[in-house]
Every structure is written in structure tokens, then in C-alpha cells.
Image (cartoon, rainbow, N blue to C red):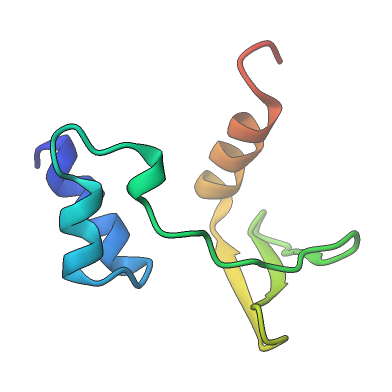
Length: 88
């Protein structure tokens, strides 16, 4: 799959409409063309660690509706690497 197709699939999975995705992936589009991100609440102690090295992040959306993000061990490790940055 080409990188642009992978990005379109990822954006669709994140809830963006086909029109929003087309705008964001148009050649010459900038970050200013992207819709504003959904404000999320995520605080200290809002992470649960599973016995199988999985991680569940507890979140709430802009209207306070609760939801969570479950990461298996590999995705949790990738998130830790990404958050640590290139100099870690």
C-alpha cells in the first residue's frame, strides 16, 4: 500500500470524512488545511497496565464522554519510543 493510501485509511479510521481526507491529501495542502484536532482529556493515573504488557489509556472527549485506547505490547512499546523522542 502506498503511503498516501495508508494515510487515507488511517484518517478514515480516525473518523474524518472523505471530503476532509481529500482536502488533507491534496498536493500542496498544508497543516492549515487540516481540521482542528478533537480536544481530549488525559491526566495522570489515567493509564492501566495489563499483566500481558498491554496498556489501556483512559480518555474523555470534548463533551466529557469516556472512552479508552487499548494498546497491545508491541504498540505500547512503539508509543513509548515515539514519546521519548529521537534523542532518547
